[in-house]
Image (cartoon, rainbow, N blue to C red; front, top):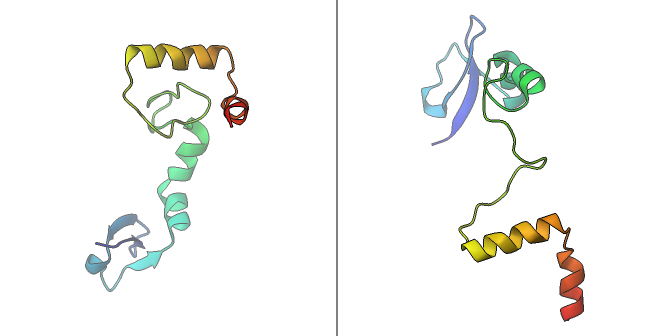
Length: 97
């Protein structure tokens, strides 16, 4: 099902299925939707989610995590060791080849 952003005659914006768009509603771009709905404002001022000040889950790391993986305790200890000692995996891999 394809979703689109629409604006009604009163200026309210909403995301809805393309099949449910009424004749009086105007299809708008995602950027315009985020600007009119206030999402851009909240992202700019609160950065980590939630529309109230201090709401939402705070970032644990400076970079967002891409993956989650299940590891044994021994593997977890190795990963922590590598992080603490700034192990360069690319340099290690080049020495093996």
